[in-house]
Length: 482
Image (tube, rainbow, N blue to C red; front, side, top):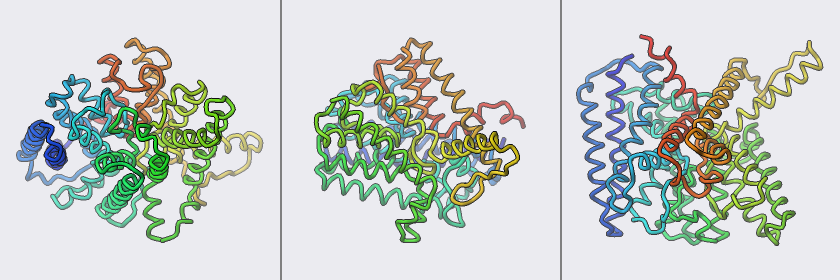
């Protein structure tokens, strides 16, 4: 293991991250709520720590290998969350414990959207902005951003990119990796700006429009209000959220290809997008019809309004709420939680198993049924008219096996902390799928759960964000053999 390049890279990345603690100072200067000092201290500590890590190894010219890439990605997400806690800990308006602060920052950076905070409407604007910004940074992955700038600093990024994008994930869009990262960020930034403008035109003020555009495009779910999107009670705002949650749930590589070809119909030629659209349509229909038949809402318009919003929000693992869906007829909250297991498309900012993996597992199951009926038949599994290799199918099932094992262990561990079954199940699903809101005791926020449960869920969020394999590899003894 070449620790010199690892420390050098983490130091560089920390210095870059420290710059993101400056915008909240500007926000505080506008609203005059005496939070600037917390962020100034956080910036100084983060930048100086990064500098101390970087300086001893600045002349290191060793090449990155996959092991160093994995170690940097995992350790940096942990270190980043650690330094992101500083403003939360220093703020007099919060008075958070270290466990709470770490949980909140990990939830933000992994775009999970689970929060321990209540009374958001009364918190300082700088703190609210900082939470939203954490999700925006985490949405595309701070590592992908680093891939775009590290080559300019003399550090290559291919291994970082692969570690961040394990399994079936982001395709390379351009011949050079740096150009790929920049292309992804241009699309991401464009969506954010357009979303913010749309929110403002729909009725939000500037602060809320910017803040909610951050968490919408990041598929994060943090809000500046306790009632989330329901605070506005505005169909136009909910419609904007639905459109951008849907768009953010699509593979960003596909967005790039559609933009490059200037042909929207290219979306519908993609197998994963077709499945994504089908699953969302079926879920919306089921939820809306059940709401109507159960008499929960008296009009079709109301049932459709809330059914569409909550279906898209939960299925894409965003976690926004336009109403308290945990109070709906029992089958619906459970159905929505289960939809988050599938999640959004690979290469999007969403969580879950990912649509393409579920599609391939379904195709493989159909293949086995056909093979049982016709043992000698030669059946290929295809995706976008191309045969899928055996190694890809094995990696999909390997991922799913690790996912199931991790889910069971986390859920059981939470129950050992005293959680009931419903809360433990939904909290595990909400954290490992990077969803946010759960059921039972975590339907509104996670403030009431134990300290040990918060640490378990923080680990679960990171596990889900790195799509399990990257973190599991780090925990395997073979990884540390020199």
